[in-house]
Length: 383
Ligand SMILES: *[C@@H]1O[C@H](CO)[C@@H](O)[C@H](O)[C@H]1NC(C)=O
Ligand SMILES: *[C@@H]1O[C@H](CO)[C@@H](O)[C@H](O)[C@H]1NC(C)=O
Picture 1 (cartoon, rainbow, N blue to C red):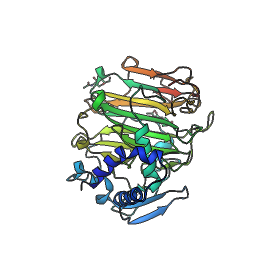
Picture 2 (picture 1 turned 180 degrees about the vertical axis):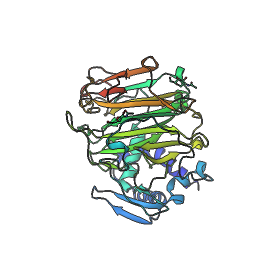
Picture 3 (picture 1 turned 30 degrees about the horizontal axis):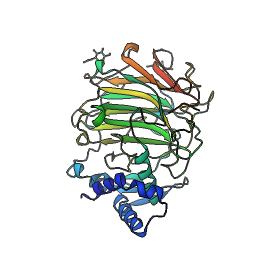
Picture 4 (picture 1 turned 90 degrees about the vertical axis):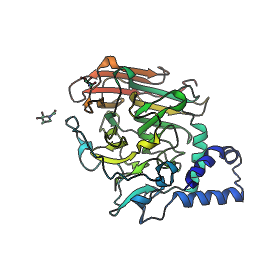
């Protein structure tokens, strides 16, 4: 039972020699194989996607996340107990049952899709954990985002329709992401859930495509660390977005939400009308509610190298087929309804205006409502 926890410790501490000496010793190799066996549960069915990765359908009660000591006696929630009505807006693609341009599988009843972890994934993840120091001051990271001030909290949910792009990276070790998040707690012990899309070739087998992702408490991504409980039978974390938006042309957008289920306090991820799964309340020490929620983008590049694009690669200009956007954004307060945030409750943060921008517009009515844009071309943004 403690094995997966052990794996995590290894992942965190074993990073340095694996990184610098590509020559894994035989012993390390055996250790990796052992970890893989633990992480990849025997599948009910395997789906070999045409994108170069495998998705396994795993018995919903035997998903790897339940090896985590904290979740040992967790009672599986098959759906959110209580779902408040959402604000009614006219949404195009994202409110249909199929989420446009997102890879979907069909697992048999009682099984859920889990992206199979390869040995390379494991090695890369050790690297990533080492590189991803999740503080704003970390060299190589850039941000352009909008967040709600703690003054109008506490918060129980965040939502918005996010346009999906495929920003260009120049190297495999760069990242460009768009997401919404909820967080609480002091900087040294922050509890946080991030959900959105990203380009991160190191994480996705070298592929520069756009993938749906989530992470919690600044730990590793998707299901590489335990924590997330997969519920949906078709949509899964780490799925490829096969169609993305075209600047000035067709927009692909996903209706994203992170919200707390009131009875269990679990935090659910929703896309379109589909509940993908949840992070059990037990994982969190300070997030009984969120004191900050937000929307925006981030990039990462090795210190000293130029930053990749963020969003569509263009600055905000209030034209919603230009810069990447979140429209019809909402938050939940204690009344557990979604509200559009008034302008005075929103802070924007942008660490280098030459590279990226972020604008929160408030309620623009028309087809975008409460909305923001962010992104830019990147380049030499300093560290
Ligand atoms: C949705 O669109 C329909 C037809 O275009 C319109 O009649 C209706 O008022 C719209 N609803 C909202 C909530 O905007
Ligand atoms: C929740 O936020 C809305 C919109 O800002 C506000 O009108 C309402 O009073 C708030 N409710 C509570 C319980 O704080």
